[in-house]
Length: 284
Image 1: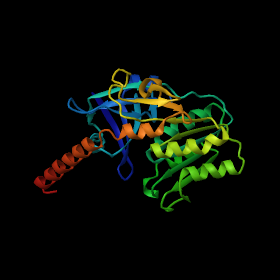
Image 2: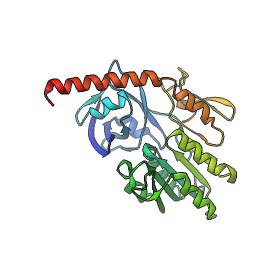
Image 3: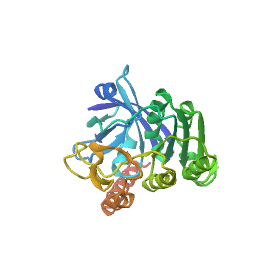
């Protein structure tokens, strides 16, 4: 059992958890993830390791409430225990001194971008970061990203903060200004990562994306996380999670991620119903 030592609300439906997992904390590197199972009947979900503290023996994850399992996790608090935390999984981010690296995070994607930006900075890169959200209240890790960036650009879809528009517009502006860009890492919703890759492709800028498809065992055995990259089948859990964005078949990835939408909707509706019923019975 893995104890939650801290829980912090970052924005509406987004929470930071610190979990006691000393062996994972010692071994994890930027870009790696864990697979959680809350209880014996729970599904297994992958979550990026945002940070670790080897002294405290903890890892940090950031969770957005989007389905039944993440909703259950977001109801947990300090002192609660998670049944399984497996990791670190996946290949670490390849870190080198490229020169100028642009780190792009969309929504909850800013969480996995942060440790990568920090590692790239420590390797001597000049970091330009672009982070975005639908609205100001959903923006996360602004100060953390600012601390590892020479320049930080913020976008919101509704214009409530920073640039009114999308992260790709700021990236395109930097390219149009003929800024020196040697490397781009983009993490966020699939359409956003596809758009980032489309922006950099005509300019032949080395671009990596981090994929988060349906995943079960996290060891390459089940095949649930297979994607097509450069015309070849890859397993995100062992071959990734990071791939050349110019080679990913994003359209296929989108179709595969929609495979269980009906079942996910039913599970969330049942969870919401039973939660509402419990609140009513308690008089809440």
